[in-house]
Length: 438
Ligand code: ASP
Ligand code: MG
View 1 (cartoon, rainbow, N blue to C red):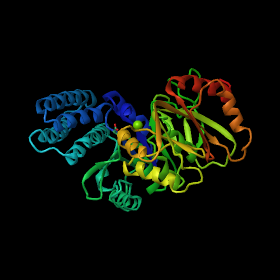
View 2 (cartoon, rainbow, N blue to C red):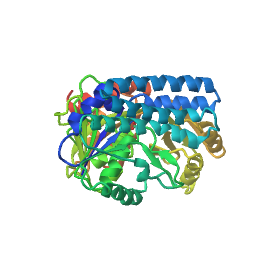
View 3 (tube, rainbow, N blue to C red):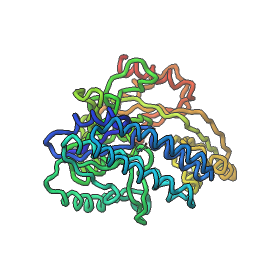
View 4 (cartoon, rainbow, N blue to C red):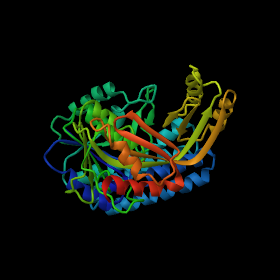
């Protein structure tokens, strides 16, 4: 069974919900994963923040505004009285539920329950629409099979078992609709796969069923070779390996949830990125690849802080790096890039949340320098066969850009440099010219 995932803008209006039928109505069996209508999850986050702050009248205003938007969608989406009434009943249930928290205690658990409402609404609304126009579909409750474990990692075995049980209840059906993003946690409570997590839902389902293909439908024609918002000429990359895609997703190519490639890779299910606005366009396919010498794309990630850590005693010392890493571990702060010399090490982090405490602890045994407003620029490809020449090409392109750090050899799929964010555009343009002749 093929899995098709549609993001918030693909269900962002009555018109888009109607148009979706063209893409999901065919005899081939499929599971359709939907996000919440665009803007909904942000609005729910805002509502939750107001409730945390005990600003109940603000929360009520936000809830009313969101409900009005949904009411308007309903009247445009449905033309039959019975469907319209079902839609109204649906809205009432969900918005009464959201409103109930203005009267009650509000904790992280309630917040997660509120955040789940967007996907529950969009999927039911699409399902009712299909019913109105006479297309049979089954609404598959993600909360019955999608699950994360005590470490917030998806429990693929549980998902596989329970998804198959759900599917078996509807033997004859070939069109299933389910919610992206939402799941239950190890305690059985409503939880989610983090923002943008609908992609992850889709790849988890595809992996659980070893689907022939997972399709991620967005508004862009696939993954581009460079950031189209910054560089004038870019093109969609037709094929990426799983490893290349994982590097790109992490390094800020916003099109895919960073970890969502992993389940697909684990079960070797190709992931195809397609464009709802140009359904016939080829898009990008992410799959196992045997190509070992190519540069596929360039990406950048802002908001990086570089920390240079110097110890007089690092020379020939062991245990130094461990002491450094332990501090980052204690503050649950992942390190992205790392370069070392005999007497110093530079690392980068993408969250400054615990920066001060980390620096204070480091200062107890080393000298520390911090550079904020840095950008990681990474070149992704498969460099296994062509170990010579690749670095030359990359650094020749970047010869006029001041480089703060260089990371090469960490993987065969990535060469990264750190630059001051003010040089980011120049770096991306230079790489586009040097590597892609654009
Ligand atoms: N609705 C969720 C979000 O906005 C999940 C998703 O769209 O992927 O983050
Ligand atoms: Mg997304």
